[in-house]
Length: 436
Image (cartoon, helix red, strand yellow):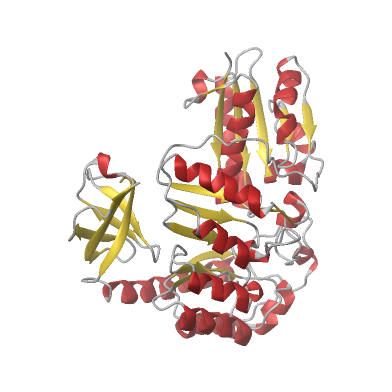
């Protein structure tokens, strides 16, 4: 039996796609390898959102090459593979195959051709492909990602995703519910629904509000999360479903990208600062205690100092609990590369440093105020150090607990005893609430 090693970069969608590839290749007779030195096939599942992610992958391919033996296959899959296509075979000479996200069904055949000495690629879009008949191979645990939507119909000028994942299409609600029920039966109690603009989900009959209610009603599912939503897709129906569905967690990751209307227009984001803040207010009114995180890009072409200051002021006005912050990265093939007045790299880097400090200061202030509170915590896995276990609150805060590894999957009421500014320490104050 041949062995396959998959290394994953990028977003949760790529994590879910790697699980899908393990399922496809397992059905074709491949076993999973955890060490590239032991693998007959090495695949790197890639991200194309930022240039540094691609450069990291290219460097990693050079490292993996040393494990290649005659007949072994080294491949690039995912968004970077889709973006660069066959040109990647020329750019990295020892790469044997290049496969985009819609072509994983052909992966075993393509590996066979590559193993026979051909260098092959498949980056065709298939707007019907959901891999509905392919069971993903997941690491067992209390949490799981469930892809409900692939592709994107938005055309934000900075974003490469529509060009690497194709048009938006949603899975049938019944198929999603079936997969979630299977996960619950195997011991999973928290699911995260994935889509590029997940709250625009619509299967032709059911919208995202229907999906939230249906998934939240699955027996054994105690928590439902989703990412990443688009601000204008928080319809009244969706907000009402979030409020009414007990399993939906009190946390929303709500990308804003900029606090300046002028920058938002150049980004082709379909809302204004005011409209975004109205969504924030609507969510806070409907879901008491909801926490909000966001994505922010600085240094977008044409961004002035005054426009950047508008982004800084938005952090205080929206009162974010956390933010993922990025310096604009030009992506060939996106409209933004044709915009004028690109911000010098040094200026963008300095703005990013200032942004990070403001975000961290706000998070530290808010988290310090949470010390002493009692929250329900799902114990997920061992922490990377200290012999502790890592858990998560419904509001998406990480908590370190002094519990044994056997506690994974348990729910506890825990008092937050301290914080480093981002992660909390906690102490159990009630017996186990559930072992699922």
